Length: 319
Image (cartoon, rainbow, N blue to C red):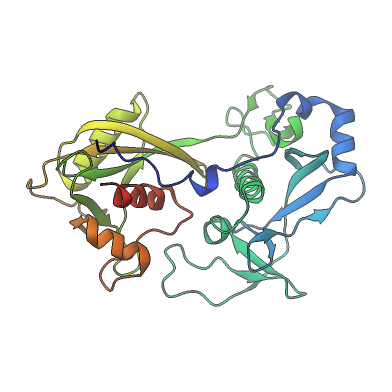
């Protein structure tokens, strides 16, 4: 009997192996030791870090001196503490890819060392490296946007090894924000897994780039209700049989993508939302399978770093 499809693999940015023991973040002696024997992952203002071995491994720096106040503890593995620190120097920008869905993400330091963005390298990294880089980008990005108290506007102080801020004026504490967003693969319900999948493209994407539909969860809204609302708003169809698939952090700047699948009538007319969806189309399983192997002139799928890729691949490989 055919089973409902699942994600093809664990989403590439959901992999993590380090110990994120919360009590350690408030233990000064333990933090000092982890810094003394630790490694630092530098992250620049565009979310890039040094890489090596063809962008398949990170290139962290050994710690030096005293523990700085702006260092954030990412976790511990085999007695080694991993830290994130923002890199303030400007990099020499690389040549932009004409097919980049996100713009320019490569760069080089003065000594020629390569720096790459998480979206470019996430699928290439080991489980440990992917988890560290994802957390580093999330924390560095949050601190860059949370320098002042949301209550009184006073400059805040970092606490808990970078996992909290404290306002010295009004005492308000803040913790890293994560904004939930749903992402849904809609199929036509023919058989258990459908025969066609609904793909769409945004106007700002490179030509022929298509993906599944997504949107942010609103205040007071359940994840399932968000799925139904977003699909209706973006392509004008009603969905049913909403089912959870998995999730992946997406720290650009602070999201978590919660993956679902749903069913709609494949004969219902599609009405792409003006300004948001340039085109929506039904694509057969055979065509998606072909596009997973080679980029087609009229169909380019999301990169393997995204949960969207794992959703589409999982659907395509199902019966």
